[in-house]
Length: 316
Image (tube, rainbow, N blue to C red; front, side, top):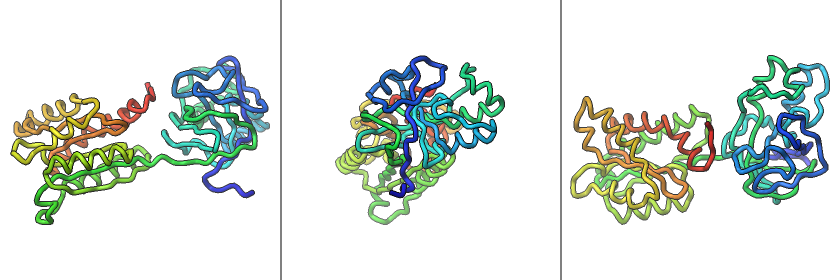
């Protein structure tokens, strides 16, 4: 059977009972919620299983002018079918038995004492950037010859504009498209994939509640609202969003208000809020393009870190 583009084949499964030692191939591995049974790196953390592609191993074989044994580079699973280091955090490798989620690509060199590390010399730092770590979403038995399908993570972003006039077509929404534009630029900069959906609704509390709940149920990773953060009788966004949140993240909005309010005191009057609802990060922004520029400039400084935190990945 010909391998499809989104499939990788398992060439070898390898374990080591002690850290910083060469892993040795075994007939099969048992994967549990802690990682691989009997492997020194299993545990309740985000780097339970390591993967390394034969494509990269072949490159090092040429550099060292010798054949590198499967497992010699001290990783659990040797694959063939894609250069594994092109994977991104939160991508998935799935079969009918196994579900692995990428949590980290590359690691620092802490002076591991495995013999081949010394042999690699100046090439070691490159190798360290090419190992992929996963955590277990579903366990089972894996052996050489098994096939995993590769599913890239596409982050889903919802942009909700609240405006009576824009919802009636009397006013062009400018802040929503600006959020979309800046968000696309941000995800491109960090080299993550994203899909952005936009919606315009009137300043209506019940309608906003419905849209927010639907976005949460549809597993949107980030939800932005724009508009309705003032103090008029129609400005209901902060109250609705605050009630929707499971946890508040007040610091980011407080900082933005203080930073920009030092020069323009009116910025202190915005009532934007931020927080977490289920697995979604939620930000309620003002309705002007200028405010969107200012708020997202600060929000994007911590967004990637918050996504890792929300999903229990310690990247320190």
